[in-house]
Length: 236
Image 1 (cartoon, rainbow, N blue to C red):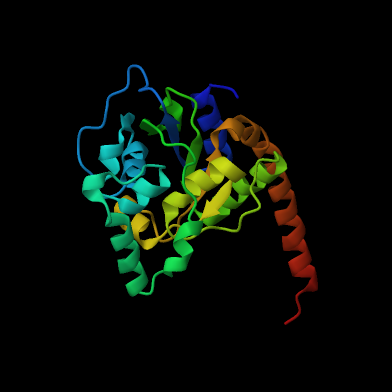
Image 2 (cartoon, rainbow, N blue to C red):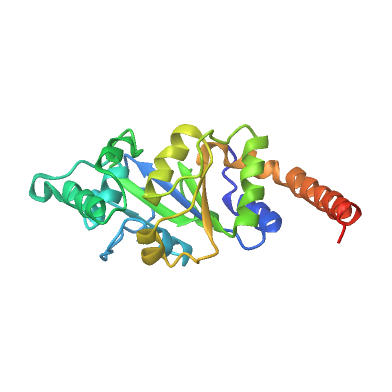
């Protein structure tokens, strides 16, 4: 794929207005010239918010330990001294009626355990992302999903719900996928009530971006068609 990430971001923003984009890469070696994250966060998806604010950094497994679900979906195995935390978190969610314990084995997770996880605004990406998180309003993400489908890079998965972080490995395995988000993600990232996600497979990002102009024109043409049809066929 093209590594002109600033150019790809400009293409996406020009076609999609207020879309916000985060590059995520799961790595075996630390990226050169990139700082390691040095703070503490309550959830792995908080790293998305930091990248949306303009920060570029990498994390290690221990940086994700406060989030048993995010730790799991990122492909990490529980260390011995934190054994049982995932089970306890799932049990709490089940007791609250949020999910059923039998759903847990079907939650997608990364297939290979990374040594490092890199986050950055797409335009500042120093490595090829494995997945790009797109944040925006439904009408905007609709067009992005349509461009992914036109590029042959969309999954056949339905829009995903909780936990939001499972959408990253799902996209890497199957193609672009929409996520409604979940209550934890919305609290930890500040995702707007009127916003959703589309997760894009990084290796197909340039292909998806190249289809946006066609999708944009098609939507404008069909908007006029449907508006005229609505006016002609509507009777009081």
